[in-house]
Length: 517
Image (tube, rainbow, N blue to C red):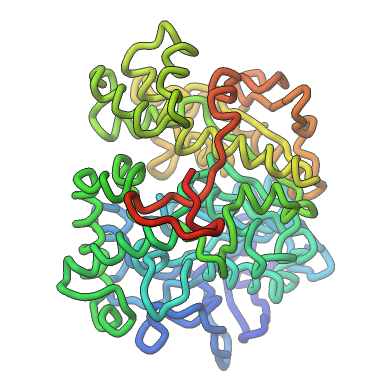
């Protein structure tokens, strides 16, 4: 071990860094991995960071990327700061010969919000207990990162992620990490980004393993993305072009996106399912940065050489329904609308009614929303990986969150504090309750051990998924291995193909980027 000084220093390609000693870890925060995407670089692909002289202190997180004003994160950082594209590193051993496994976290937030400095993403416990190097980073979100803007590359947020992974490959040895053993892991939109990276030629070879927790299944066609971007720009009386938008303050542009999001339900005739769920941005299947949808890419063998863990929580939608103020209040009409809009195929709604005959409006609403947005995209990613000749391990988290009186079940986001072990900090940790129980600590230890073992050796501790037995790990008070438990939903969705979401009522051009689901 070489971590002994109170101010550990390393030298990377761009210059020297001084971090902090925190317990048994060397910690470096706010390291730039690309130039700030402002001024002439606004809406551009990330540019390599410039070298610096002397020793740069790396003690504080970088600024939050511009994002939705409704996010508590938006007020947590200096709005004038421009160092959005930064990484943070927790290392148990700075000796370059340590060659520790590396885990690179991609945060969620519906591609609209998020930043790496949230306390629930602190990598200390995961790094220390698993003897791995943990890396977290920021990427552009919202309009800055994902809106389809004329004159700008598509999927700038994904390109930021590739740049961060390039930085890891070039520099992680200085932190004791092995660039040949890199695992990307993420949750929600972060898991959707992991899926996208598996399909991106630019990301090939930058990681060897991947963990996708609750894959957000929304990917846009260029036509849909352009139409929504046009509406965002119109809020400012502008067009969605670099020329028009580059002079708009990031906060004003984010506010325009907020206005469109708030009114999306009224545009369902054009924007379809994403209007129903108020999802204004997502990765775009543009044919270049992201050539095809992740499921199609993996089925074709794109991820064959990457080992994959993928799964979801049992009750994904429950927390989101609570945030909508609908928990226990869903009407028959609302459930019928959700089934009509989101269930697959012309008979999807009836198949839910037949498959869950005793379910009332609340349960039907929860099931179809959970399946459409997270559960089935996650399962189908594993199935596509296996079909393409790769290996996938599948899990489901079924332990019910004790917070809020236990009404949220195994809800969306519950896996984040369990995986990081930060059970008493941050907003998602509120799901655990005021004081973490012994159950929570034990389950968290199980999940951390599985994640870090997979990162180190490729084996999370349960059998790989196949289409015969469909074995999955169930994470609960007593973890077990069993056949995939959501069989009714699996059968309802088995013939569905996840593809780019279309612009409704427009001529469909040939080719995969404009195919409907």
